[in-house]
Length: 165
Image (cartoon, rainbow, N blue to C red; front, side, top):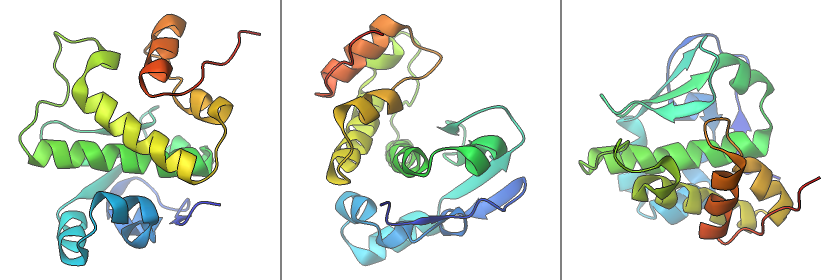
């Protein structure tokens, strides 16, 4: 279903993006994001991933623009979510390289334009892959936002809010 292979055997350390997400350089999502082959190669060559033992998902370090991924998430996370996450984080890397403030503290997480742009890109790729709104809604659920914020984020991104169980 996803157009990449995830190297789940890596240990903690620093890697090129394509060592962790093989084929992401030619994936439809990244090609849509960076259609020029040379610019895409340069962008990926100047970006790295740090696999850590931290209990974390994936995030971009606003000190130097590298992507962090938790070892457990890399090994056990749902492949389609990992693919959507790396695309989301690569949007943040581009934003970082453009000089944008990734995590403005005076703006709520779900209202930050950097987050909306990155989530929208991931959601659009999820739709391209044929994911249902329920599946995309699940993808948008993160533990650092409330249920109300989760629903509001989904609505902002045009994702149907799942009915409560």
